[in-house]
Structure formats: C-alpha cells, structure tokens
Length: 392
Image (tube, rainbow, N blue to C red; front, side):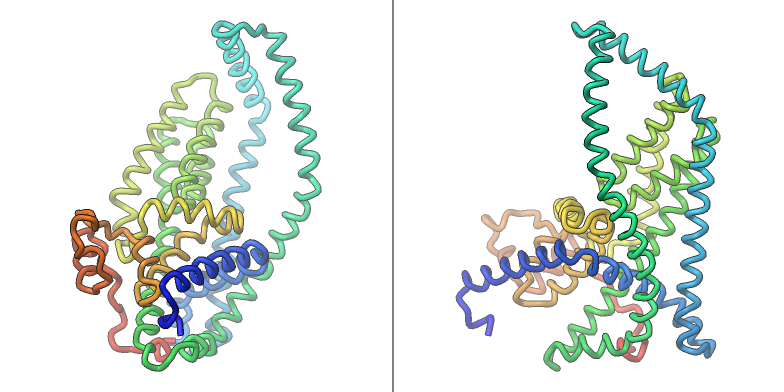
C-alpha cells in the first residue's frame, strides 16, 4: 500500500510517524521508560537464564535467580557509593574552609581585573542567592513527585523484567505474526542482531564502570587525591551518557578536588588522569569489549542523547544509544526505511554522491563496500542455524 503512494506522501507519512512516536514517548515516558529499561535488562540476563535452564532449573527459578543476582549487585554499588559520600560529609568542616579560601582568592582576582569591590561582589552574590533560593523553593514541590516516580520506576522494573522473560516466547510469536511469512528470515536476523548488540552494549557498560572506577580511583589514590574513589565512581557512571556525561564528570571531579585541597596542583592531576584514562577507554579498552558490530555516527549519537533527554530525562539519555542501534538494524532491513538507516550509520562515502552517482544507490553491494571501507561490518549470527524460538 505504501509503495503505491507518491514519494512525497510516503516521506510525509514517515515524518508524521516520527513526530507521533516522539509525542507518545514524551507523554507516556513514565510508562514507556520502565518497560524499555526492563526489555534491555531482560536481554542482558538471558545468558544467565539459559545457563540455569541447561541445569534443569524450573523456569520461574531460572528467571528469579538472575534478577536476584542483579539486585544484589546494584545494592552493593549503592552501598559503596553511600559509604564514599559519608566520608565526604565527615570532611565537611575542612571542605568549608577550603571553599572559603578559594572564594576569597577568586574575589581578590576579580577585584583586580574589574571595577567591582569586595562589598559590591558580596551584594551581587546575595542578590543572586536569594533568586536561586526562591527558584529552589518552587522546585521542592516537584522534587517529591520525582522521588516518588523514581521509587515506582525501581519497584516496577524487576516485575517487568520477570514478566518479559516469562512471556518471551509469546512476545516472539507476536513479533513474527506482525510480519508476512516472506519476511520472517529478515525478522529473525534482526532479532539476533538486536539481542547481540544490546548484550554487548550493556555488558560492556558494566565492565566499563568497573575498570574506570578501579583505574581512575586507584591512580588518584596513588597521587594522594582525597575522595579518589568517589571521583572514580561518579565519573564512571556519568561516562555512561555519551559525550555529555564525561564533561559533567570532569566538572564534578574538579569541584570535589577544589573543595578538598587548598592547592591547584591536585586539580591538574585529576584532569590529567581523567584525560589519560578516557583516552585508554575510548581507543583501546571499550572498542575491544563492545567491538564494532553496529557503529552509529557521532552526529546521530549527540542528537539522540539530547533528544532522549528532552523526551524522557536521564533514562532517555542512557537508553538513546541502544535504541538507535536497534533502530538502525531494523531500518537496514526495510526497503522503505533504508535512508534512515544510512542517516544513523557510520558508513561515510569517501566521495560525494553529487560526483559519484554510485553512492546514490540503495544497493546491498554498495552498503557492504562502505561497511568494509569504514570498518563497520555488521554482526554475524553467533548461534549457528538455531532459530530465535528454539534458543529461547
């Protein structure tokens, strides 16, 4: 039916569909985000579930045990983080002195480079502080709602994960019934690739958090930086958000170091260590862990992160990359949506399509040629000839 429509009408329908999906996510983010997060977590837990099933555990027990292991791990991370924060709180008197010292130094420097005296600076700061307090008071009402929403999110997550794993065969059947039988081969291939890329991404992030915390925290401890482990943990978790998270991680690391030291030397050590660890992570460790199964270009990543944040908050920013990766897998296998797959991908032609008409084609041969040139060969099926339903 869509193929019979004029090209302009088809493109208009696609854009309208994108707008409606965005509006749906924005309006229903409180329902959609827990479901989406549960979907990704359930895929990550599938290997553990299959391990228990191979040892003839009952289905319910084989689902429950991976969720329990994940809950214990998360509880351990929360305990570790709170213990580090408690150490920071115990140093509050010294932090207060250091902050006052840095503010006085900043005030003197500002007096030298501007016409504002210390009294005028204090007056401006007090005025802005009153405005900030008024704004903060207005946000307090919404804060309670946010906390309650977070508790609902955390409470629903294990339930959704359990039910999705319990009804995985039903969900797979629904997906296959949704498409004509002639397309089932492509559907199965897309399902395998989606599972593979999601597992690689999420497991890779867990490994990344672990080694970033150990590397960054350990090196900073060797240099004698206070609250080194807290800086390592905060940066490791913020780094999960592509591009933006690393920036905030650097800022928080600098602020914590400034608050804990009267010298600027530790700040330079923190910035240098973060830069070195990030270089190691981006160029050596992370590519080997996650691999290059599906590459998303930097423009699509940045826009996706901001769009995810605007539509669904922090959860949307965190989930933007795996969602884009899955969308690319689907788009690449759909004749209608292939242009969108090209837009998201990293298969950049070495010549302009204006000069070389070959790159205007949707040909599979051209796509594979570009994948080879850009080292973005798609994921191969890792499970031989098994079908999705057999494996699950």
